[in-house]
Length: 606
Image (tube, rainbow, N blue to C red; front, side, top):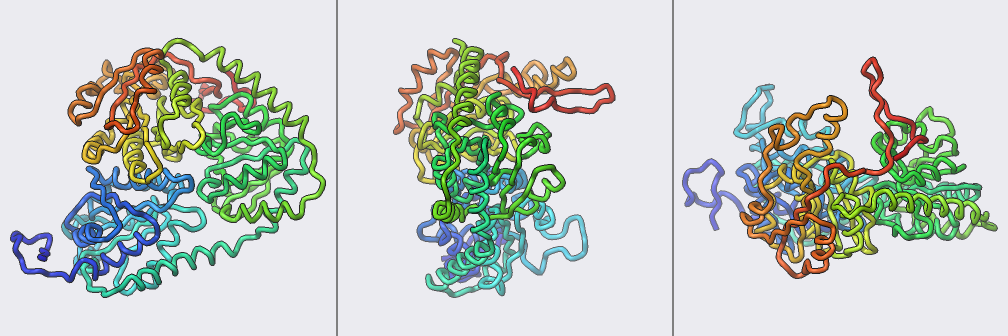
C-alpha cells in the first residue's frame, strides 16, 4: 500500500507512513469509535489525509461523506440528538477553510449542549505560524483561537498526550454539561507511528469513563432529594423540565416523581417529546410564544423547580426575572455560569447538580417522603385552564386551509416517523414547534439555541445513521437553500422512508413579516424583493427524489398514509397560507426613543 505527501505531484511516490491502524491518527479514531459513535461525518482534505485514511480502515466505523464542513458537524449533531439521550457524535474535517466552515454548526452544538468530537487536520508542526503573520502555511489559520469561543474545549494534540491529555479532553465532551470538543492534529503527528492493540484502546476508553465518574461524585444527591420534598410540600407546585433533563437522561425519573407527587409539569420546547401531550400533568411550554394556560399556571404557582433549564431570553420574552416571579424558585443546573445569571433575583435559589444522578435522587426521596400533600384541587384548576385554552385555540386556528397549525396537527396524527427534525429558525420553526405534539415514541429535535437557518437538512442526514428509525425533516424553502448540497448526500445513501417537508411560504416569511411590521417595506426576503428560489420539483428531479406538491389540507391528509416507510426519499412541498396566525404571543413595543421591548408575559394574548 502506498501513501503520498499531500503536495506530491506523483501518485506512485514510495510509502511514507506506517499502516494507518498503527499511527496516532489510527489510535485516536479507534478510541473515539470505542466511546460509542459507529458513524463519522467527513469531508476529505490534504491536511487530514492520515485521519481520512484512519477512518476508512477502522473496523466498525462507517463514514458518511458530506459536501460542506458545516454539514459534517451538523450531521454529527443530528446523529447525537436522534437518540433519546444524546450519544457522542463524531466529525472530521481538514485545516484552514475546513475549520472555518464548521463555525456555525459548532456554535449550534455548543449552545444545544450536544456531545461531539470534531477532529481537524493541521499543517505539520514545524510549519505552524509563530510569527503572527496573516498567512503562513498552506491552508493554515489560527484554528484554536477561532474555534475556542464556539466549543467546550479546543486543543492541539501531540503524540506525547495520547494517554494523558486525550482521555481528559474526550471526557469533556460528555461530562457535566456536554458540548463539542475540537481536537486539532498536525499532519506529522497524525502520521507518527504509534503501535497499539485493542487493549490499549480499551485502557484509554476506561480512563475516559473513570474521569466522568470522578466528576459525578462531587454532587450532593441528598440535598437534591431534599429539594424534591420542598417542592412536593408546596400548595401549588410546578416542575419545569428543561433540555438538561434529556441530556442527562433524567426525563423518566422526573416524570415518575411528578406522577407520584401529583405535580403539574411545564417544559421547554426542546423537551416536548419527553412527555405526551395528553398526559394528565402536561401543561405545555410557557413563554413569549406559548399557550396562555401554560403561562397562567406558571404565574399561579407558589413553588417552581426548574431542572436543567437555561431560561434563555427567547423563551422568557426577555423577562427572565418575571418568569414565575411570584413563586419561590429553585434553579438546578450543572453549569454554574448559567446559574450565576440568576444572582440577585428575588425568591430564587440556585443549586449546581448533575441530573444524570436524578434517578438516584428520586429513590432517596421515596425512602424519606412522609404523608404526601394533596394537590388535587391545584391539578384540577390547571386541567380546567388547559381545557378552556385548547378549545379556544382550536376554535381560532382550525381552518380548512394549509397553515402551519393544520400541518402540525396533521403530522402529529401521522405517526409516520420515529425521528422528526425541524429547522431552528423562522416561521417553519416558531409556529410548527409551538403546535406540533410528537406521537409517543417519536424523537423530535431542532437547533434551538442558535436558531440557524440551513441546519435542519444536515441534522436529518445525521439522524438517518443513528439507527433510531425512519427520519423526516421539515424546513422552509428559504432555509433549505443554505445547505442544499446535502441533498446529494441523501441521494448517495437513499435512506428508506425519508421525507423532506418543505414549507413553501415564498422565501423568508419571518423576516418578511418583521420588515413589513417595522418598516412597511420588504427587502431581500421574497422573489419580488430580490431573492431567487429554485422550483422544488426541479430540485427533486435533479437528485432523483419523488416530488409531491400539496396545496390543500385534504391533499395532505390523503398523502401522509401513503408515504411508504420502505420507499425512497421524497420531497413534499407544502404551499402555505402566508397570512396565518401563529397563536398567542407577547407583543413587540417600540418606544419613541427607539428602545425595543416586549409586552409583559402576564399580558400574552391572541
